[in-house]
Length: 262
Image (cartoon, rainbow, N blue to C red; front, side, top):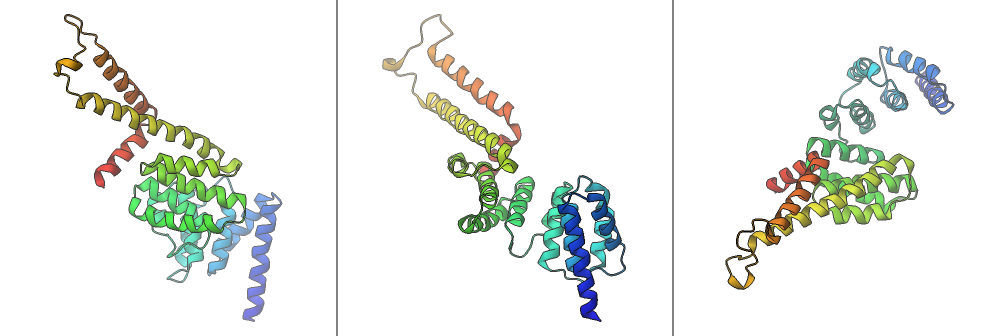
C-alpha cells in the first residue's frame, strides 16, 4: 500500500512539472494548492511544489500556504526542503528568513548563487567567503554555460563587494553570454571600472596631500593668484570622487564599512 501511495505521489508531482513546462500555470497552481491543503505532505512534494511556484509571477500570494505546509513537515527537514525555503524566501525578499535555511552544504549550483545574494544583501561577508568557495568548486566542474554564468555572477559580485574589482572584471571577461545574467554582467563591469576610478581619485588626492609644498623648489603658487594648478587638481579629483559616490552610494558605503571592519 505504501508503494502504491508513493507511486501516486510521483505521478502527481510529475503532473505539476508537466503543466509548468507546457505553460499551463493555472492547472499547475490548482494541483499545488491541493497538495498544500493535505493534512500530511512529504518533503519531496513540498520541494516540487515550491520550485514550481518559483516559476510563477504571484509568489507573494502563496506565502501563508507555503509557511503552513512547511510547519506540517516532520522536523528536522532535509536539505531538499531547506533549498526550497531558501529560494522561496529570497524570491519574496525575505533575506533574513532565507539565511536561516542555508543548506549544510549546497549540492546545487543555484543554491550557491542564492546563498551569495543573501550574504551580500545582509552584509554577511564571513559567510559569503565560505559560499565563494562553493561557487568556485561549482565553476571548476561546470559543463554548461548557464552554470558557468551563474557562478561567475556570484563570484564577481562577491569580489566587487569586497573591494577587488580587478578579480571581478577578470571573471566577467570570461563569462559566457547568458541573457539571465546580462544586466548584472554589463552593469557590474561598469561599476568595477567606477570603483577603480574612485581608488585612482583617492590615490591622487593622497599624493597631493603628501607633497611638501613648502619646498621652494616645488613651489608653484603665484602671489595673489588663489586658483593654482595644485588647488585645481584637488578640486577636480574631489569632484570626480564625489560624482562616483553619488552614482553608487550604497556600494561605496558598503566597501568603506567592510574595509573598516577588516
